[in-house]
Length: 295
Ligand code: GTP
Ligand code: NA
Ligand code: MG
Image (spheres, rainbow, N blue to C red):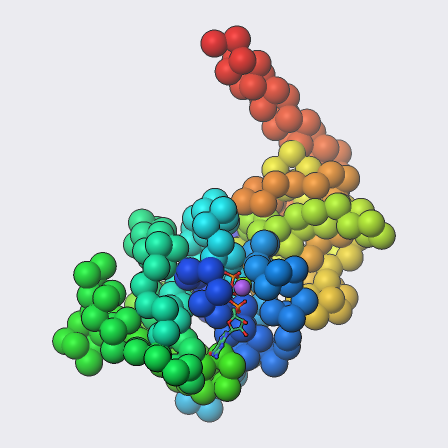
């Protein structure tokens, strides 16, 4: 495709921050779900991706959210989230303040040159001090507008649902002011695997984020060293969909193996081509591994 085929696409927003500061609860508040209650030990262990609709100045706008774990063990997932994103929402609990994974997360976002919106969460709690969070973050180059800087801070309570509209507003303002988000929806799809696993009933499944083009049921795809024909696509409510356009996260069924999170995917002309590319990649990886072990 050429320039003329470019169309506006929704922003991809990664929610990052220290463990238990309320990232998943925030997404629950936005989506009106209750994922937090279903997590083992209340700890997020995988990246999840969801698309929501909101209105901005009377227009329907979509925003894609990527939820990342805050536990210190999951650095790689935070780094991956920062790479696949357009905007980072840094969640900081107002009763706890800036913590090690807060700093790690903002370092990932700054390294990826991604604009940051700060959500100061848990303002409903006793001992919450949202201004202290603002003061702490100035040390890391995030200076609130009300302190003369250019970073948008929004006080929220994911528990009570306060500040959520303002946060969505801040995200869309940032996207419109700082980013020119476009992609060609007519080409063969390309994107990135966000999460993948072997499902007992469905076989290998991968949550992918479409970055360019449109992914369709029946497409032949290669994802890392895995390949296959798309048998079904499920949206973030596990409802079947026929296709997924740019910035849309979707669960792909029909792969012959489980790809790695972070693998790129491409649509190719047919199954034979998909198999060939996957086999070439696997062979290249084997020889690279052999070279490594003989050193
Ligand atoms: P990890 O993904 O494991 O890093 O945690 P998280 O950042 O996703 O935090 P989570 O959403 O799991 O919330 C942690 C705890 O804080 C849960 O018990 C939530 O109910 C609680 N919580 C989240 N937001 C708020 C809030 O605004 N106010 C109050 N009082 N509690 C909150
Ligand atoms: Na948690
Ligand atoms: Mg979580």
